[in-house]
Image (cartoon, rainbow over all chains, first blue to last red; front, side):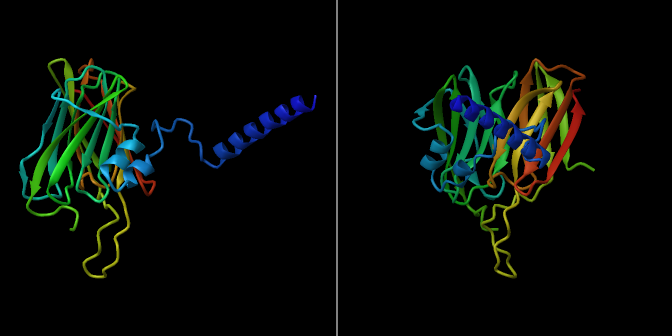
Length: 156
Length: 103
């Protein structure tokens, strides 16, 4: 009987907490974004840390990923990067700059018919690899390309 | 006035959607040249796009995306006349959103 009472109280407590949180605007009904920003992955100081924060470690090299980035970038503050994945079931395209202080640039989740393609522009602090990691069907694949930077993009 | 410009047009069986967002994208690691103080981090960290009310892209960004970010993506199965909505939120809680019709 005590056990039952305890569970009822627990239920009431949770409901009350949700109501308070909703009232304070902490739970946004109709919040647009699927997940909270992955602070651990974006704050990671190395590629391994960033990928482990994204559950994307242990990627196998793949020739089914195309990475279009310049061989030499005169201005590291705006380096165009275009990624196409030919891997069926691609649902994440992750971009990293290996020599940046915090390497993780972006994690794109693609759904509802979006092609496995992304084009954007990124900052490169120094000459180094731009790395793409693709998640498809629960597996991870990767490809990197070195970009030589003649003028650093993160200092200013 | 929205700080997002969207161009959306069909190409083959996919819609090509190009966006330009107005944003400083400060990493938080840069110093002000005059004061020597770190410029606080201020960057878009979430971007979402819908086509005909269905989410097609949900992205998380760090400060390593270039200022005034450019983003292009392609959506299969979209059609002329569909509404595209692109929204972002930054690390300081600012938000912006804009829409366009696929040509």
